[in-house]
Image 1 (cartoon, rainbow, N blue to C red):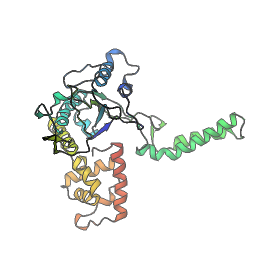
Image 2: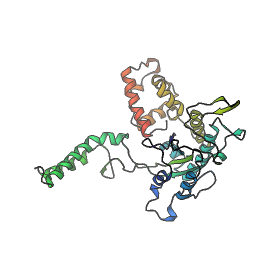
Image 3: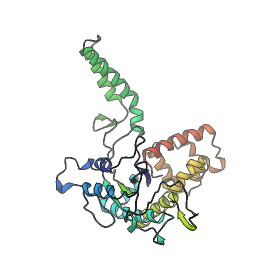
Image 4: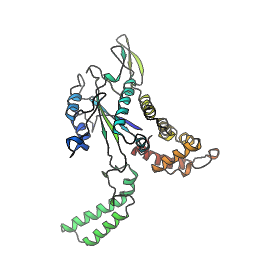
Length: 344
């Protein structure tokens, strides 16, 4: 499970309305009949319209400055293995999301009316999306790029010839374009994969928009707080502050495993990702020390995400990863993390 939390900030400015973001989340509804629309949901309701979401988020910003975010977005990105475990069920994803938001509330080291923050204090709306498209960080796009670049050059030449600005044989140029299209290493349904091509297989994920202010519109709840969970003295009173992101993500991961009886492999865990970022050598060492069956699953998951695991296929007692080997593995796993192709 790959979970992200982002502020609304885009290009250095804070929009004063959530309308643009909500419109973006409506993209999969375009062209659908009313009966087929995917609605927003919250902790209790399943059919909330985009207009209602915008009105509720925009109307819950009392005392927030123009330089402060009005809302945050959370994405829940299950891996293919996790989606397979729940049979790509939208209902299970909604159920999971509602449990995740309980964990989100508990991660705040804050009090409202002398009690801990609960999910009842949150104003959030979520939506299940069923599709994903290829982007620049994906292996397929990166490896197709040389072909894409050359094809673009040839098409520009053809336009120049047609405009009378240069000479050349358009037929021969089109022939080369067709050869390049056929030679590109990654194709789908007979066509070269480009940015924006829909990814095959189960791609379900969840987008959540959550108000910066609590449901009463009185208290600010920021998961982007620079303060880790702590207590400070303000005006003679002890005040709790902060948001524990690590605890939130770990609890969200554990919630999925408990709800759906999912057996999570080491390389799918948040702990593994943290270890990889802080101490790559320890991360690789931990993989080689896994029980045989678990190690086989770990290798399979990494290989599916495009990581060359050959360097890990050596006895633990003789594990001497060189700087070059570590860098090669780091590059591969880093790309896998960026594209969300493995659940770490």
